[in-house]
Image (cartoon, rainbow, N blue to C red; front, side, top):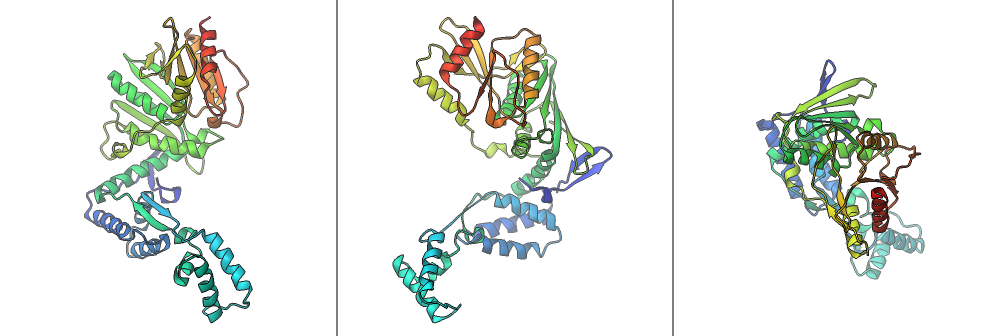
Length: 399
């Protein structure tokens, strides 16, 4: 992901566009190749050494901001770790305590060497290694232990995608019009929205298509940064789906409203989702394990259905099945606000739908205001979902 200072965009009227570079441009491909080679060559060396080399390379280029952006994306593919014979803070303490016995200890003096050798012997190492480990816990001294390399072309594609994602940091609201399409396509789009825990409302049906409204990070007053990242990483997933048109309302730093538009027919952005592992929701995994160990007479099943309710759609996470085959759906919210939650409950009430439980995790409330309303279909929880509480609520709903 790119930071705000590396984002580049331009405007035409009320529309905003991310800056894209041509991925087949030989100059950019050469820069991408050179930067990748630098990262590959600096495995095992310190972050400070790597950054110095990168600074020298950037100094030779004219596209300073683009090179910085490419470097940021490559840094995201790195892992750095502290490499030291002992905890650096412990080493510093031992050296300072030993130095107090021989004050004053001046730089490059014999006394300084004696202090380092004494402590080094205690830690079963050499004075040179000890000295290099004194501040090994500082970021600049951490060593590059892993670099997930890529190709120059993929790096440039990732840069273009990251510029589009950066625009969504300031999204107020996103509307996605999903044209009539296959059940699989509907399920994929709804599934990704659920996967990233985005606050959403859905109007429409499978025959005529759906209009999805996603709340943007700029509309939240709590946990907005975390939510903004989730909305940005949703974009590559949306690119994998078909038959959609998207309009995102963006608020710039001056409070002006702009619009970013995109369709599934576009060809400039390449999704990077194909090479990412499947994500298992730890909350869901714990619920499944706890349910399996419980004495509940109801059964818990993961749900893959899109429940078409005529004027809206419902994408629950689980189905709770009673001993006589009655069904209550469980929807575990991602991010939510009291307003979005009340709206969802009102939608279901207006169509007479009642066989559902909405579970709202307090940790993901996107508002400082607490919900002041209750419902027999609503369950608030703080850390984990309790099987017996869910079973009891399901039985109560069906009475």
